[in-house]
Length: 87
Image (cartoon, rainbow, N blue to C red; front, top):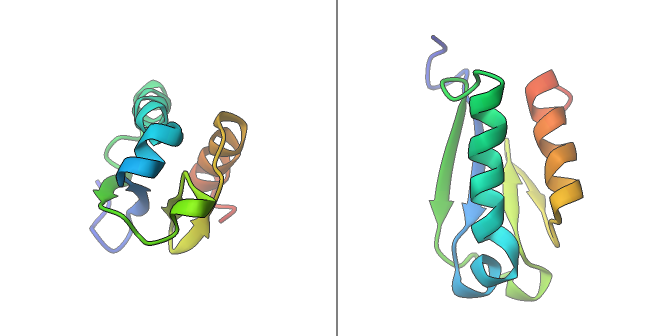
């Protein structure tokens, strides 16, 4: 099992705007993706309240990189890059 310093991290904005614009569905998609690949112990998924970037939402941060206007397609790309170490 990786240590905390080796974990990949996804931070999902849970502010009302981002949540309503798609992050509610993104959370379920992230969980399903990680579970189907046996990666739930390798990726830490956390939520944060509003990150003051509502107009660019839904927002997500992966390994320190901010992603704005995340769609289902861009989320799949982010997850693929995250799990292949391409971030």
